[in-house]
Length: 522
Image (cartoon, rainbow, N blue to C red; front, side, top):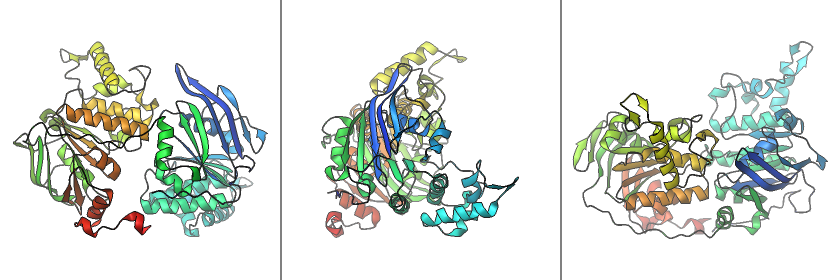
C-alpha cells in the first residue's frame, strides 16, 4: 500500500499565497482544441505535480508557461501580479525555467560555460570567468555537487549529473518557478533518489517546482499537491495526502480501472517462436523461450540483465553467436530487420523517437514506411490512395486520436505516437510480434489501450513476446513470464505470479518462498 503523507514544508499549506496562478486558459491548434478550460495554482516552496493522459493538455500548459506558446484566452499571475508571457525571454525574466527529460546542454563545453552561455558575466569587453565560476560553485553546492564539477566537460558527466547541471542553469537565472518535465524517465532508481534530494533542497530555499511524470508512484515521494487534467480541462487539484496511485489514475482516465486479466489458451501447441540456448558474446547466453500462436509471453529483467539485447537478436539487428531461433518448427537466423520481416517477425522498438518514428512526416507515411512493396504501383511509386486506406483502417483499429492521417507524428501525444509505430508492424500481419518496452513513456490511459491491443492480437492468433523492464506491465499482459538474470533465462512463472516472487527471482532468489513481502519490510 502506498503511504501518503501531507507535506509539512513551509508554504505548502492551502492558505499560502500563490507563486503562480493560471486561470481560464484555452488553446487551439487549427481544428484541435488542446486546452479548453484549465487552471493551475502553485504555491511558494512546494512541489506541484501536473498529471494527465497523453493529449490531456498538460504539455500545452507548460509550453504556455515557458513562453513557447501563447494562450487564446486566460490570465497568468506571478506572485500576485499579472504576467504577459509572449516568448521564452519573458518567461525567464519572470523567473520561470524548464528542465526537460533530456538535458539541453552542449557536451563539448564545460559546466560553467553551459550555465552562462548567452548571458556571460562581463568586465568591460571581456568575460569575467572568475565571477562566473564563483556563481556556479555556489549553485552546485546548493545541489550537493562538488566545486570541481564546474570545470568538468558535460559529455564526461553521468546523465543524472547533467540533469542537475540543467537545474543549476535555471537557478543561476534566478528561477522562482522550476518546471521538471519527465525528469526521471531516463534515470535509474539511485539517480532518482539524487534528483529528489535536489528537489527537496530547492523547495526548502523557496523555489516552486512543477513536476510532470507518468510514474504516478513518484508523486507520493515528492509532491505536495496534484493537479489532474483530462481532455484539455482541469479536473481538480488535490493534496497528496488525499490520494492514492489508483485514485490518481482513475481521475486521469475518467473511470474505474479494472484489474481483470484475460485468460487465454494458445491456439496451437507448436511454438511460433522458440529460442534455444541463444547467446551473443558479451550480452546474454543460454536463453530458452517459447511462444505459441495466440499466446503472450513476457521476458522480464532488471536494467543490465541483458533482456533488451535479446529482442535485437530476434529481429536481426544483432547476430546471435550461439543457439538457435526457430519459427514454426524451422530454424532461421535473421540477417537483418528486412530479413526478419520477410520471415514473419515484427518488432516494436523500445525507443520510438530514435528508432521508430519519422517525426516530421505524416501518420500515413510512418505507417507505410517499410511496406512500400505492398503499397507501390509497378514497383516505382507509392499508391497514395492505398496508403491512405491502410492508414485510416489502422487508425480506426488502434483508436489513434488524430484529426486525420495527414497529421505529423511528431505533433502527437506519446501514447498515440506509440500506437502509430505499432500500426506499422501490423500492415503485413506478422506471425511473431516482439514488443520492446511497449508502453514506455506513455500515460496510464494509453497503457491500458495498448494492453487491450496486445490481447486482441493474441486472440487473433499472433504469438506475442513482450520484452520489458516494467514488472506490473509484464504481470498484467503475459500468460507466462520468463525472468532474465545475469544474461540468461532463469525462472518461468504462470499467470498467477506475484510481484514479490518475480522481483525476488530477478534479484537472485529463485525460490519464491525466500522472498519477503516488501510491504512488511517498509
